[in-house]
Length: 320
Ligand SMILES: *Cc1c(COP(=O)(O)O)cnc(C)c1O
Image 1 (spheres, rainbow, N blue to C red):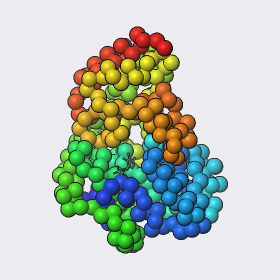
Image 2 (image 1 turned 45 degrees about the vertical axis):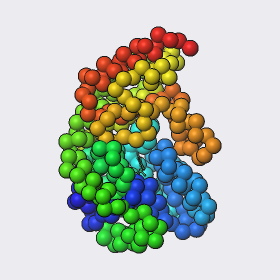
Image 3 (image 1 turned 60 degrees about the vertical axis):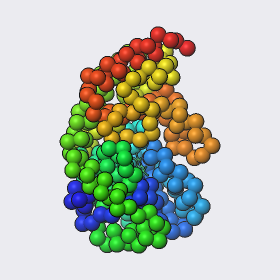
Image 4 (image 1 turned 30 degrees about the horizontal axis):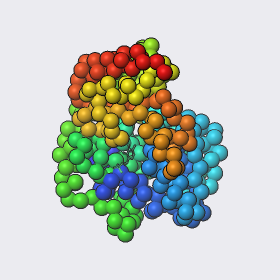
């Protein structure tokens, strides 16, 4: 099903999104190889690269996904270019087709984490990407009740990755595969519904005097190949908002690190930035402590706006 959705030759299920990402890295990279990765990638992918891959003498270089000349330079001698679009937290939507072309010029494989756009709004294989990775724990599963991952690619590549999946052990269990098939049936209507709601709320938040900045790719022109937006974005509060009071005042939004299900979630950057003992992409790439990541679920735009605006009002009455 995922192969069809991604218009790829084949696809393969995994026990989690991270099992899928690590299988790609372990299949393609060996000591001395160079991996070029975009800044602000998913924090656990960053930790995989920093903690595990560096132990195996893989050279990891981070680049600004919008800076094509710098990426061109970094790609000399690279084996793999790893990207997300949009990036985590900062939500920068990248020109995936141009990036793939550049990486191929240098003979590097290109892998993308396409979890945010989903195959409904972005089909990276058509844009020239070699390997598409999904955490199926998010939109593909869609009900916050499954942890799974999927890779879509050419038949040859999938055969290679299947072998490392077997040896390393990140297989998808039968019950989770069943839950995933159940979730996929409603994928198009779910991503459209949360996407419309999220874009409307992002627009309203960007007009709120307490909000400094909203990071949502739909507020600007979308890059080639991205034909819609989904439910996750972030925004930065001005100094005079007490973020803890804002979070506590929310009634519908729950605190949560995940996203992609039916329920709305909120995550203040301060929680993520506290994980300072381990390599942390949020700290290392300068995510603001006043930033909040927000996932819009299916509770209805107006209900969610009422919750957000009331919480912002009560949090701005308390000045620090
Ligand atoms: C959650 C997430 C992952 C990891 O997925 P798991 O299934 O939890 O291992 C990877 N990439 C992105 C963008 C994610 O949000």
